[in-house]
Length: 607
Image (cartoon, rainbow, N blue to C red; front, side, top):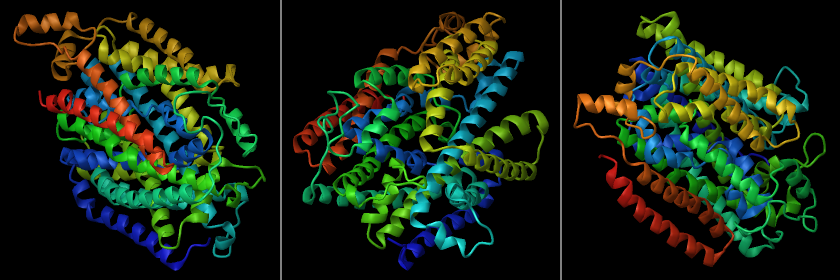
């Protein structure tokens, strides 16, 4: 299917709208550093939550998730725990509150509130900035590749080559398209700052929601009128193995399962839980998610914002994912999944299904929505990278007394620099899945140990944080080289052990952080964990001070929240594939979870 005039007009209207948003909000963003990076901490929590959800509704992730559902069925609901997707529940229940109480501008600035401003703190500050920039650049390259592969299906290079004064080899056509749309995202995010990003995200999510309902309906209708052929266990979320037998239906899928290397379902799920819980307890990585939390008006609103992300994102996103998976399964013979090398590329499932089944008009809307999803992720990640470069390098070490105009110019300069580097990295990335594996399994493995201890152990100091991160990052580089054939998920425990050894050795190589800093941190953030010596000192000065005794309640709310979030993922799958009884069971579980969270989480947020 070729793009019709109405489809092109819809896409152009969207692009013009986000340019206008950037121009309108430019003056507000230029008022101060806080206005540019955090929207002046005046944006309502539900808009920030919707913006955060829009940032997570990325095109590369959607391509990956559609492929997973096509291959693994309802069991694919568990695989996003690799991120882990349920980290939003830990944030919702207590971590967003803890983080927002710091009143910091970035995660690196937060380091000063925890470790002070001595040698260890400076080392920790530098390593956090480096880690944040590496992760941000990884996410930008990841989104860049996904968008380029997606656009190439609808705008073949043959349509464009006659209008440009240069030629490009077929393997780099996706990179060309990625670069073009990246420039639009750069425009509104650089001009409008956080406010521009949030309002553009609102427009983008509205488009995505409409597109999701349309695709969901088309998939639901296809299941009802067509023939659905899937292997045994495809509809069952619990029993069996991920290595289902597709040999009698689509034999090539077995090759995809083998290359994924997920293995036995129960072992894989256990490893995801082990890694996911530890990553979640460590708190958010220093990217756009953390910046949205720090942009909220209050700690309570930070928790509400994180909770709203799952409520608004999961049902709508998975309605689209399940709809596309249904269309691809029912009409698989109509899809052309051969890449430039004449091999089957399952990452082409999403764009080819759109090209084949979505009607004129709706095609333009859907393309605008998915391009918007890329731009939302890109803009939010770019804003986080700018925050670290400007706030934590330029203002901290180069020009602490910079004027508002100098800060504005530095924001523009760093934004352009980050985009240029991410585009270069995108040219070296093989595919979506390769970049994703590096980010979620390798880099996060190095991050976890130090960031769990920083919340929960009073004796942990800046030196411990620095050496924990350094040993973790070193292990993240060398361990995959030593074990090249092992799935990155199964390397996580080894990366964690290396990082923890660095944490412990580093901590006891230097004296504890000053009592004054620890006492101030503990009073403001009020974490639970191993803080007794600090609590005793505060209590001796202020007998009315009470420690945080909500550990049990927080764990209960996290468990209920994860169950609720999982029902929001599985419910649209069952709906599209017309599984009546499982729908009713899932709805009952969801309602019970909502009632429990209302009583034991929402009603206690202001306490």
